[in-house]
Image (cartoon, rainbow, N blue to C red; front, side, top):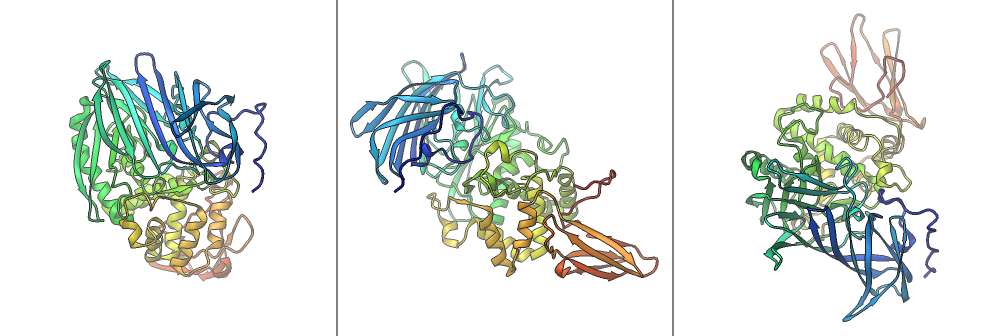
Amino acid sequence: MDAQAPAASCASPSDPYDSGGRPDPDEAVYDVGFYDLAVRVNPADSTITGRVTMHATAVAPATRVAFDLDTLLVVESLLLVQGATEANLAVERCGGRVRVVLPRTWQPGEPLVLRVVYGGRPRVAPRPPWDGGVTWARTPSGAPWIATSNQMIGADVWWPVKDHVSDKPDSMAITVTVPEPLVVASNGRLLGSAVDADGWRTWEWFVSTPISTYNVALNIAPYRTIRERFMSVAGDEFLVAFYVLPEDEERGRALFPEILDHLRWYEQVLGPYPFRTDKYGVAQTPHLGMEHQSIIAYGANFSNASMTGGIDWGFDALHHHELAHEWWGNLLTNADWKDMWVHEGFGTYMQVLWLEDTQGMPRAREYLASMRRMIGNQLPMAPTESQSAQEIYRGHDIYYKGAWVLHTLRWLIGDDAFFRALRHMVYPDAALAQTADGSAVRFVASRDFEIIAASASGRDLAWFFDTYLRAAELPRLDASSKDGRVRLAWVSPSGEPFPMPVEVRIGEAVKRLDMAGGTTTVALPAGAAMQIDPDGWVLRALQEPSGGRR
C-alpha cells in the first residue's frame, strides 16, 4: 500500500459551498457504512444542535481523516469510539474541511467510528434549492415551516459528513427533535415519535438502503399526512405518503391521485419503485423541489406550470420530474458529477415520454421544442475530467440537451432497442428488479449506458456519444443543391464522420436517408420543396438570424 498522501494546505481552504470534484486524500482513505444523525432544530432562533456518529471502514492505511462541515457551524467535540471507550481527538478546520489526526495508523478493513458533536446557526438558503442551506419559512397561519436543500453545496451545510457523491452510507438513522406540534418528514421509514420531558417531540427515521448524503433532508411543519398502500409491479405493497400543510390538505388530496398515476407509469416504463422497504414520500416545501430519496421536496404550489416557464402542459411536471430521480439519481447515481446528465437528462426525458403516452407525440414534440431553445452548447455535457456540482450545473444542458440526446438516440436505434436499453440500465436482470433491500442501488457512469445502448442496438455508437456528450458544439447539417440534386453533409465538431440518418419530406413522401459516411445526395424534382427532419428527431446546430449557430 502507498503511504497516505500529504494533507492539503489550509492556505487554500476548501470551498464550503461546493460539492464533489476530486476527493480529498484524507477522505479517500475511508468508506462510510452508516451514519447516526441526531439533531435538535429550534425555529425560535434558527439553530441546529446535534451529533453524528459515523461508522466507517479504512480502505487504505490512514493516519488522519477528514470530513466536511460548513464554517458557520462549530465542532464542540470529536470522539474516537472503540467499543465502550471514547477518546477526544483534536480537530483542525480548513475552510469547510475538518481534519483529524488519528492516534495510530488504521489499516485497510479496520472499522473507524467517530462521533461529532456540533451546533450553530446554519446557512440560510439564499435561493433554494439551487443555492441551498436551510429555509426558515412560515406557513400561511404563521407556524414554522423548515426545509433543507443542499444538492449543489453539500449536506455539510447542516451536518458533519463526508461530502462526496462517491460515498453513500449503506443505511442511516435520522433522529430529529422539534417543538410540538411540528411534524418531521424525512428519508426512509418512520420508526416512531415520542414527546420528551421538555414538551418537544422526537421523530425517529431509518433509511434501510444506500443514500446519497445530499439527499438527506429535513422537512418540518405542522403537516397533515395523506397516505395509501400502493401495490408495486414487483408484487409487494409499500407506503405512499404526502405531507401537506393544513391549509393545503384539500389541494393535496386532489393531487394525490396524479401522484399515484405518475408512480404507476414509472413502474411500467422502468420497473419497480426502488425504495419499497422504506416508502415513497412527498413533502410540501417552501422551495421549488428536490429529489430527496423517499421524501422528495414538492414546492410547486399545486401548479402544473411551476417548472415549465409558466406553461401548463396538463400535468404536474415538477412532481413527475422529481419522481424520475428515484430511478435516475437515487437508484442509479453518478460517482462523479461529470456524469450528472444521467440524472438530469434521463429524468427530463421522462416528461417527454409521459406527454407522448398521455397526450400524443405531437404534444411531446411541442415540449421538446420548448426545451430546444434552452440548450446553450457552451461546455461538453459529459466531460472526461472530474467535476464539482457547481461546475457541472452551469447552464441547462445536462437537462435539456441530455433529453434531446436521448430522443435522437431513440430515432437512431429504434424504439425496441431504446426502451430495452433504458430498462436494462435501470435493472440489468429480472432478479435485481425484484429486490428491495438496497442491493440494486449502484453507481453508474455515462460509459455504462453507452455500452448498454450499443449492445441493445447491435451498433457501434462511439461516434454518436463522442459527439453529443464530449463536445460542446453540436453537429451541423449542411445542404447544397445542384442540377436537381441536394447534397446533405454532416459536419461534426471533431471533423470525424458523423453517419446520423435523417428523414426528408419531398411533397407528400417521407424518406429516411442513411447518411453512411456522413453524406448523401437526394433527387429533388423541379418545383418541389424539401423539408429536412420534418418530425424533429435529430439534435443539430440551428442557424441563428445573426448567422451564428447554436
